[in-house]
Image 1: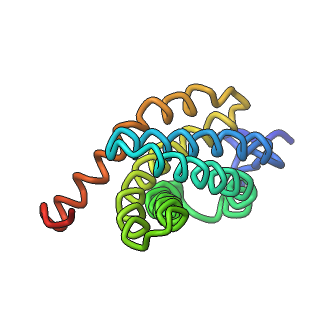
Image 2 (image 1 turned 180 degrees about the vertical axis):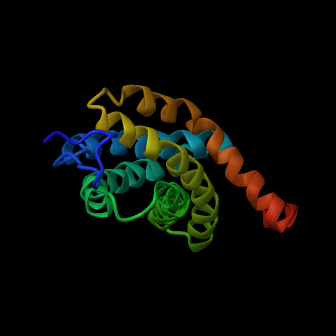
Length: 176
């Protein structure tokens, strides 16, 4: 018997809705790398930090992209969508913060690592917070994810400035 909206009973989910972890890893490596290069480059004008951040953004993005589809498969149907949507912001903040800290540590400075982590956590929260659900939605529909990946790359230069403005708003101009 085929399940429809008119038939009572629990909804039936497809066996796997999130697509290939390999594709996710590639897309999130691109998003992480591009965001991590462009955000600090446009905000700080530091090509050295941008290259270090780009490396770590791509590496951590690949890891997140590899783990996220399986994680979503495990929580699918167990948590309401608004809860999952809300979790995108702190997950992105951690991703960005780790990337910024690793970039600063690569350059050998604890101060740069702390500053990078604070600014990048805001950038990561905004970037991952908006993109993960549309990206997942496109994979569920078995559609190309290029529009979301491209949009993430287009907004990337603004995210460093957004992180700086958040720090100034939280701590005042003495944050620098």
